[in-house]
Length: 195
Image (tube, rainbow, N blue to C red; front, side, top):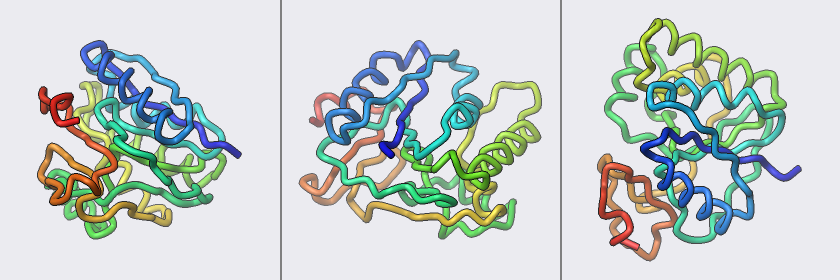
């Protein structure tokens, strides 16, 4: 089964999301769906939208761009596939939630099989944790809740990519640009100049 793919775009990230979608198609062969929402809805929709799929599915952030052909692994039932997380926010949440930071993944690119009851429960639990944290306020985060839910419910976590695999605005600067296969950097206005 060919996986589905999607991203979420608020109006201010509309153009960058279109470019991300074109690049995802160009370098994976998967034609992604771009879901639209308001800025306040992005983090909640990033989780909720998973429930619209019923099979292997890839999500990528609207500011995550593929730079070369991506050999994404096959998504297996009960498994989360994503790059290793480097976020201090997620590290703190993992400590608070008593889950293993060494298994923490970044939600900039995630693969899950949504025909799996386990994966649907992971997303539902992540939404519950997010709602508990934010109440009726707009959610400001999503990946720490997905990380906590995946670990608590026993999903297998397959961390992909190694050092230098992608450039991320947070802190992991690639040492060898020829090894970089993707870039995640909405806060860097000069993204186009790097390519």
